[in-house]
Image (cartoon, rainbow, N blue to C red):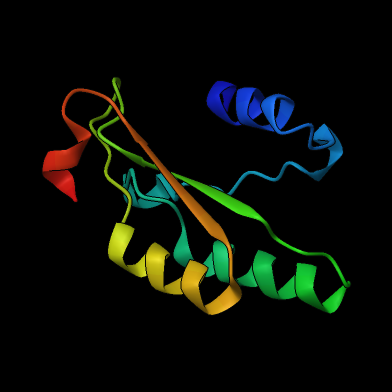
Amino acid sequence: MVRALFLFSFFLFPLINLCSIPVPTETQSTRLNIQALESLINTDIEEAKMPAILIARVGTHLTGGVDDIKTLRQICDKHNIWLHVEGFEFPFTSI
């Protein structure tokens, strides 16, 4: 979330537009919840909002979690959303 705050302030996006997508802890997964993401995007579009950026992670420092970059790329391409991938400790090996 800290990185998202940095990017929002860097690009002068209002912080009120920042949304977070839950990670399904009940399944002990460390991946972003794809269904929640798609639901949020569709809701935003229905409300005449324009999703602009998705920040995905590969290799977090606490859990080593890796988001499904291929699926997220497809969703971002479909909705013309910028996909920003950040990682910790050699993230390029996960792509």
